[in-house]
Image 1: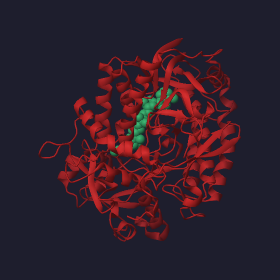
Image 2: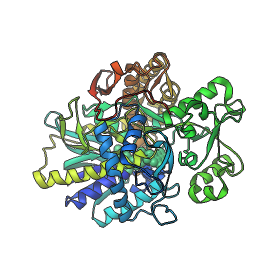
Image 3: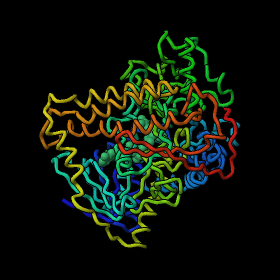
Image 4: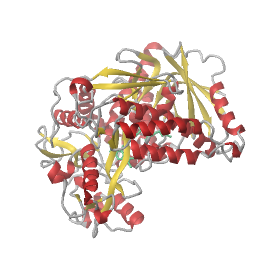
Length: 583
Ligand SMILES: Cc1cc2nc3c(=O)[nH]c(=O)nc-3n(C[C@H](O)[C@H](O)[C@H](O)COP(=O)(O)OP(=O)(O)OC[C@H]3O[C@@H](n4cnc5c(N)ncnc54)[C@H](O)[C@@H]3O)c2cc1C
């Protein structure tokens, strides 16, 4: 069936819903297509906070926020976009409050704010209270409010429809719509739209240990590559320092913002040695690298590959009222009461800094020129790269990225429809052919003619974790590329037990693992190509940052047959010249 809307947004997390809300406010006919029910999107799991220089608890300025974000990005973030985000942050938070987000409050009734890693007062002097929060359920509150507002605005929702292809037009210069698989019925549908917008979230599930939900399989990255579009800065992956040991479940940085301390086997507060000014509130790339350093030097707790997060000095009152979720996680998953005992933690794959390149209005760009737009295609949220996070994102800046650029993207899309009308581009001959072929080839393969998707996926997650995580060298990256070559072959021949049409998650697992190989290659090739260390990309064989050669964004293209191409894009520098990062 062909379904037609002015704007089709793929993804119903914070980014997709924010864009849908503002596009519908702007008068457009908007549909949101999501493989999950919107309220199950990963945004709902965001815990600790959303950054904005409101100055409710102590003096703060958007320029300090912009400086911290730039320095946090190891100077790879585009400063014009960073300024846009930090300047827009306060009013966007107030708008969210007016839409109904129930933030925690100060005694005077203002939105409460707490400390987070890398956020400082007066250009690095000391940590500042900048993260607005709703206990440790900030994402949950935002997601629910945005969904309610979208329903009120009569946005059309296609829940549990998984998009499997982008329909390009005009020789790849434009996008005419997308193709989706209806999970409940097994039907394939074409969406035609004047504008298609991706808000498909991150890819944490490509790694063995991750804080991301099961659906975080990064489909959007692969679909963009398959449409012949580039991905930007894919080598930069954030490992969050405090995942529950072995499980990867997140303990928010807000825990350290409220006074939690990281300790090694000697009980030492080791971050004091590495970041004397901000200590445990150093940015995530640094803290994760330091944790591994402690472990490698034999100071893992109990001889194991973890350290501990000590919350025993924080007090049961703060844990109960400001950090209830993570206290429960610790009790339920590890049997540890954080009031009395330190929590074993290790870095966990958390966030994709890179993604589909866009400008600050969410329009996708397809080369090193920022004017080279893809007609009818927008992207926003974790799947996009504006780039405000550069080589390392600061905590609270993803939720902020979603709402600021979601809002801007929604408004830009509505404006385009108002000004240019809602004509649709031709879908071409048989737009669903590629999707049907892919599904048929998996379904028609005999069950014993290949491996199960889960086997291939597990091997992919293991090689990515072992070879492409916090510490990298040319050797580990080459090992990963060797593995990916055979994984591509294996993924192309996976089989599924379930041959039915209704809720065939087996089939979607098989599709997703093929997607994973595509962008895992983008990550690994980009990482091998960048022969320096910057932010979250730490090369043991090139341990210094090298601004002369590498102060530039990576662009990666692939033909999915092993043919890859690398290009570059300039970094926008406005007022903060690159300096050595010290905290
Ligand atoms: C545990 C956790 C805690 C976090 N805490 C914070 C925090 O406190 N502060 C902060 O700033 N950031 C935090 N983050 C990061 C932040 O939450 C995410 O980066 C952000 O929520 C991503 O939002 P999104 O809208 O881009 O994607 P998501 O919320 O992940 O939504 C993706 C959407 O895309 C849909 N989708 C994906 N693929 C397809 C497809 N093929 N077809 C159709 N639909 C598709 C999904 O159904 C979903 O609706 C946290 C992340 C995690 C994992």
